[in-house]
Image (cartoon, rainbow, N blue to C red; front, side):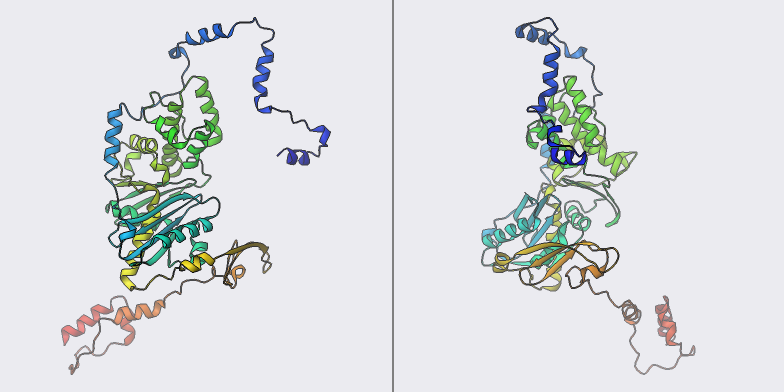
Length: 475
């Protein structure tokens, strides 16, 4: 950063001063400013601090506690422990199983599901910046532990890395995140009418009606207010996210930090720290802020109680009990958080895979263990040059000669790439024709009706079946 700063301002090396211990210069300045003051001992200073009555200090706005007692917290945890998925030992499983993957922006999730919806294997981990390597390691592990009498009947993937990973591993099915998450949510609550998914860097809200997605809302600006938002503050206080969230649960005076973004939130947190607020109060306030950001900035709802009657929350952020409780407090009602909240996308793909296998009974085309082991990818960057856009393309070349191109703004840039291959669209005219005449069966030895023959074109009208019924009645 210093080098770039000097280059931008065209400074010479001798014109740049980078002192040691620059991070404590403000404290050093405060100490130097005290040289002219009357000296006092450290013990007397500590004595004066102990005499300060915190109730006399100015306080930032406070909000309702998450829990009033340990008993209330225990009851809350017991209630949410009911929404679970059965598990089974994969080493003793026999028959078809279904692999669901969810390649997110920062994490990758995987579920191997049995024929009865039980989870045989699950994995939730950081992708370390390479979803391909993370997925490869997971699939290799699945093949290692899969018994001889079990087989992967179908595989499916959703998430940001869907297209690349689907092509790389020959995964059978790909689906948009909202559908995969809905399938999982409906498994826990068939009447679900609202889904809130908060991940590490994104937030999705789905409104549903009669089993269909009616509206989808996403966080548009940045990742502020998601899981990484809490991680950042936890790390700044040198705490793990588990310690940070646990402290919030029994905070006595949670701080109202609003729903502003991370930059502005930092200044408000610092002000609260000056006023003597504890880490627990700050953590509880931030948990409320995550939910306020979802409700008032993403969903933009005025009355949270009108979101829906059957609400399912999911995403890794909702493993945080403080965030879940803050949502229920602001909503004024109880919601459903499945025990696999962070695996819902992968589990939803498992359900989709099971349905597909039951329909066609064709075995998965997923690369076998040897193919996974030999798989390698070479990534290069080049400009397209086929039109004035001159897109910067990312070319992923696999060891078997296939390649996958991204970054193109038109199909010319993906020429020859697996990314260009689209699902063949049905012949809509033929589909309509077959639909209209599927009910018609010529009558044997039918006498000529008094109405007479109707032109064939009459039958392509929307009410043609009524004309057919009329003829049958006349006969």
